[in-house]
Amino acid sequence: MTSWLSQVKSKATGKVLVAWQEFAGEKQYDLKGLLLSGDGKPAGAAFTIASGPHNEVSAAIGSDGKNFLTIWQAFDEE
Image 1 (cartoon, rainbow, N blue to C red):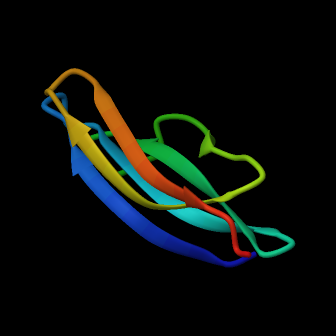
Image 2: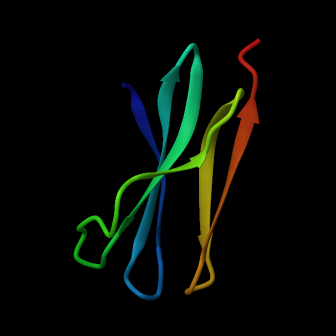
């Protein structure tokens, strides 16, 4: 498994969303995420942000202090 950290963003509550692209096989990358509590400990399990027949990469995360918004690029390897 190969992973690259894409983005980290703080929330007013102290929580942090970490997003990364992870090699899913067959030249395909998916976007994964994990919420961390204010003390840096996981606040749940890692989850899939985006997955599909394309590469999902280059995440950017925004927050209004209550919610997170994640955007990314999707493209074919061909």
